[in-house]
Length: 347
Length: 198
Image (cartoon, rainbow over all chains, first blue to last red; front, side, top):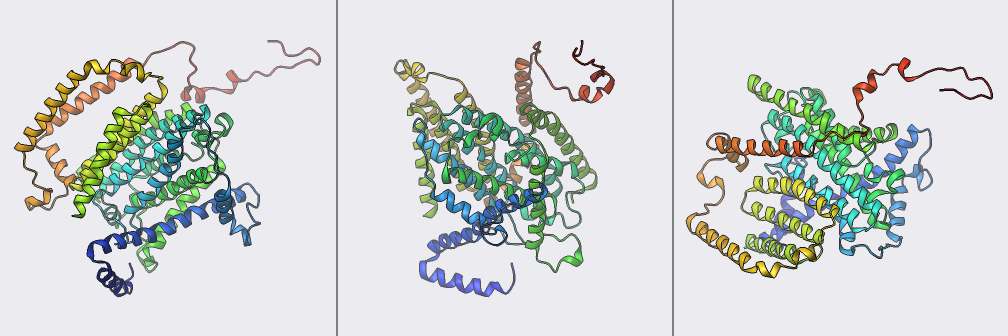
């Protein structure tokens, strides 16, 4: 955090504590910090939709949206307005409570996981000692929104989409979890700030390149993105678990998907690409948060690039890749990393 | 004071959700209530500063076990009304088991003093570290036994379900790659009006 902000923050702190009392002020201050964290996240979520359409348009030699505002810059706002004013349809035989709870349960885990992401030294909402475990725990909750949506819709296409997604997310969470263990072994900490600090000499992507590749493919599968977007494979399942959703309730699913995508890109940059650390020492005059943004942006671009390039996997191929290819490789790499740490010491 | 409020918040939800598990008529709702109870129990763990246990509870029980529960309950069409019909006959048995558990809990609560977080011992270790150190030194043997039992269960599940069926099309990637042009494609000269002959 820049030094010049400290006196200003101190003044605000003192004023607030005097006005509301210490306990209540802590609550209010935390809420303010959460808002400051989530506003840019939601901004990124809205604008990644435009970036996606523009980039895929570019790759397919089209223009992409270019009517609303200059260069289509207001397109996400138009989309949001459209979704908000559309009618919310409730299927007659749906389980109403579960049907309406599901979109919220998809979006909320994608947002609360941001609490432990360090953007720069000290710039983190909750600097907890089990950051990596927290991320794993929260990301394992995302599956409930989808499986509840599938079941609550009372529609066979939705149900099949939900079940597929549950199996897919559980499978790829295993391989994603295993790719994080070598990182923890090398850094000797579950705290994300410590993980970044441990990469000062060399980014973990160098010793752990296969793990980085597996991590990235696994999170593409976890976020249900193409080429693993089986839960919503249009050709066989209409739109999967989103079939019965309309207006903002389906919008929430998409927001959850994009928020997750941005989250795992930031996480991948922190775990493997050195987080806020600059690639070379003489570049350290550029603030760390910008470096983190650039790295995460690159990963996000790969997400979109993959979507424009690859055909969709078949379901059995997806399962084979997760269990029979990624799992043995990552287990082996845990062993190799452990051996390396034993022989040569930590990073 | 604030911690007390949070404690009651979590516990009320845990108890309510646990009641929901046994009284709700829809079995999927039961499982979802169970998951709610798990999540709030994890909240109670955090309140005890046992954040490692909380994370494990969420990852293992909510992320894996309960998802599979939900999977099975949604897929199988179990008629729970049928199962529940004779429940009143078993009430004395249930009360007896509950009473035994209650007595055990009271004994444990009287015997063990909760000393608060690990930091109270004056050693600056996080509880993740403390658990790891104990598990791989003092409790290494029970830990290995437990993992062996899990391994046996794992292999058992594979052995029980693995069967070779005939007529199932499987993708064998090595044989796909090993295919040559000669064995896959046959060029024939087709005379016009006659069609290809096998």
